[in-house]
Each structure stands twice: as C-alpha cells, then as structure tokens.
Image (cartoon, rainbow, N blue to C red):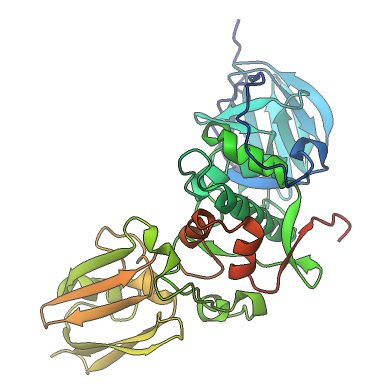
Length: 421
C-alpha cells in the first residue's frame, strides 16, 4: 500500500520542491578484463580512506520530495526514520536550518541525508543512478540537493565523460594521466571548504554522469591510481585541462588572470601539434556583420546594432599564438565612432559560435571582406594545463602517464593524497 502525506500547513519562510525518484539497487561482481599493468602496485580505491565530495544535482525551488523507494532519513549521521516508497516529504528552509515534515512528524536540522546502510547502494534520481547519499541543505536562500560520495567513486562517473576511451586499451596511459589530473582538480575544489557543495556536475567543473556512464577500463585505472595526485612543492597542484591546445598550451595568467603558476606556463607540443589527431581540430565559423553586432550588443559593448563595421583587427597575440586582443572599428550615423576591444578568454564568450555555443578557442585568424566575417581556428578549449588529445597522441607513441603529466605540468610530482594537510 502506497501512502502519500501532505501536511495541512505551510511553512512561513522559503519553500522549495525537489521531485526525487530514488530506487536502491545492488550490483554483483562481473569479470574484469586483464590489462598488462604489472609495473604498478597501487592500492584499490576500495581499500583507501577516500574523502567525500559533494556534487550539486539540483537547486530547484520546491517544497516536496516524492520518494519511490525505501530509504533512511538521517540527520547529522543519526538515523531518524525509514521513509517508505510513495511517501511525500515537505521541505522548508528557516535561516540556516532545514525543516522536513513527513507523516505528521517534523524534523529540523542543519542538513538531512537520504540513503541506506548498505555500503554499495545505488540511488536513482531523475533517471540516473548515483553512488553514495543525497544530502539536503540550505544556504539561507536556496535548498540544495547534493550527491555526497567518496572521491574515488565520483571519478568513476567523470572519466568516461571527460576523456575519449578509445578502442580496447589504446588510450590506457592517457586515461591514467587524466585520472590523476581529474582527481587533483577535484581535491582542489574540495579544499575550498564550500558550505553547500564542492563541484557542479557539468562543464563548470567536470561532467559527471553517475553509475550508468562508468566503464570497466576507467574503473580499473581509478583503482590502480587510487589517491594519487599531482603535487608541487609538496602541496596539491592547481590543475586545468582542455580538449585540444592547438599545439601550444596557454599560460594560466593569460586566461584566468589571478593564476601565475610556474607549472601552468604554456608549453609547445611540437611543430606538428600532437592534438591534431582530434576530429575537428581545424574549424571555421562564418558570420554576417549583423550577427557579429548582435554579439556586441548582448555583451554590453554597444547599445544597439545601428553600426557599421569598418574593420576588424587582431591587435596582439600571446606567445602561444592565441589572440590576446581583437579590435572592432565601428561607425554610426547616430553615434560617435567607436573602437571596441575584447581581450583574452572573454573573446570566446562574446564572439559565439554560429550555433550559439562558446567559441572553440582563441587560436584563430580572422578575415573580413566588409560583408561577412570568417574565423579560421584550431584546437578546442582554454588551452591551460593538460591537452587531452595531445595526451592521447603521446600515449599512442609509448609515453607513460608520468611522462605525459610531466610534459604538461613541468616541475610537478605524483604523490598520494596527504589527508593530514
């Protein structure tokens, strides 16, 4: 019998509603492919004390949680109640606390968790399976639904979406390098000690897809490199990566401004870019003058499109070859002539792709004939740190993951996470 509980009252403060569909299931062991990796003797991720990371799944405004499976409601790790399938939970935020109402009972706490006592339980949410627990908390203005799970388990849902797997084990060392880089990136976000969550589940951090995207080869590599990160001067390194650097990675300060880090200075791959093996390495975008003017209006550079573009010039480039400054010379009958200058990585978010997405990279040339604008570029991403397709090339050339990481992050070392720091 399924019961639904709808409280007769409403809380006076902020109200929100998450529609959670949680189903707990269990998976047996399956046979694993054997890889030639006898040179390494790393601990299994299941045998290390992996810290928990918080992944934001939802911050929708709602006042109810509808459950489709039996779970346990926890408060500060204390078991409060068994929530049966079909029950409806009302949620309200009161300052820094959450109040939950179910079956006529109210519970108030700084946060709540939904999960089971099973170590390897799987939770369903919006059609996806996630390891760990679901945490409900607030910052006083929003209620957040966060997937809280061990760092090593989080990586299982990241690697297959952030790096091409390839055929069989052809990208093995590249994937291993990416595993260490992704773990290091994750740890740096965790070290910020944010109150609500550590990472987004999209490209604002690392794309995370939960259990269903996991692959045998990446799970094996996560186990084999468990706890290993990049360090610099005995501290966790600051790590970035992008799909294709176009042949030369970028100095971090040229993209992020406040980062001036020795091991994040630009490095050249070779005369023939390693990452040229990426499909779509070279690309072209074409625009009308009206379309380009609409980009300038959208970004607040000009107030309207009643301008004529007289000329477009690349004023300067970084040593990597990426555009540093681009200048638009505009005239108008209604306004004074204007020169609009766009700098650095802002170019990518202002001059969008024809499909509306962010420009692939700033490593490009531009042609303007008075009516149309053509941008011819190469690479994909900001270019700082590890170049993923360059990493794949080096892996195919027989380089191991240590050599690959040393190339893209010169001066760094690979060490286990020091949980005491």
